[in-house]
Image (cartoon, rainbow, N blue to C red; front, side):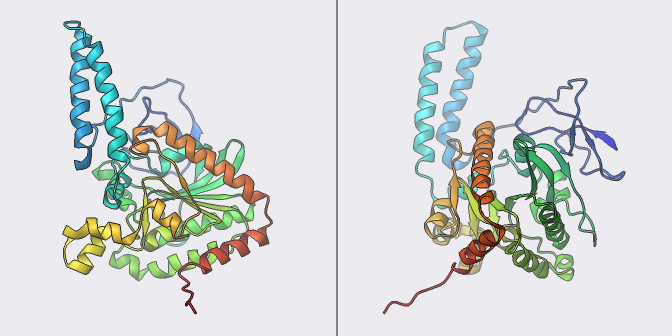
Length: 370
């Protein structure tokens, strides 16, 4: 048992936690590491969390206005000039510009937002939606895959199993988490936890956010394809409610490996596709230069996926993305999970399984016109 500090990318304080990991750390000893379990903060330790704001090219008008606003506020605070009227005008202008920018996003721009470095990851959602989270480790075969996290937790008194891909926020963490790309042992760990949830009749919540399954030689040697295929087979017949939520990137089989559920939901600024726009562009045009065109052709955004009947719903995000207002994003996800669980728990296990299988079996079926 050991005491670790954790820091959310969006919090003001870091909360030490007691981690039960059989004498081994569950993460690197970095400032923003997240370990699990019991809340413990007797010293009320403060950990600074200043992060530079990241802007994309299409957000340049917002960046320029924000810089003007910051300068006006700084001058006003020094008391040299009354800038209150200018500050009010700039705030109003920023709000109007934000609506204009984010109201006309194309497919590639949504992909960019889904990859925003300040966007909440799986452990951020678990920390802010759940309580009493106890992380479970290992696939009981090879090792513990840090790109896939999971364990028991409570949501408003409802005991659930939460599982999801986990990326890192800096270079060392990204290497440690393998950039959110699980190896076969990650998918086998996820399946082990799902079977454990089924044994104790607990609903399963999965958070999808991966650029794909690990493509390395060792992953293939250990049976990457078999591990993902086994998950698809087993998840289709789980007796407990299963809710899958795409919170960032949903790429190929790496996402689908934990994406078979009674409800598959996407957050507003996420994507879900068999291939990334860059990879699609490199295959079709031998260059990444056509990634914007590929993103539009793939129909990978949440509205397109819903229109094509490939997902069951969209969870609204704060204007501009979950990273702009994490608290609101957490609440939206939590509320949707509770709403869907209420509906699914009213169904029998056999009814859920039959509906689940029928839903996925009907995807991709083409009916010839007569």
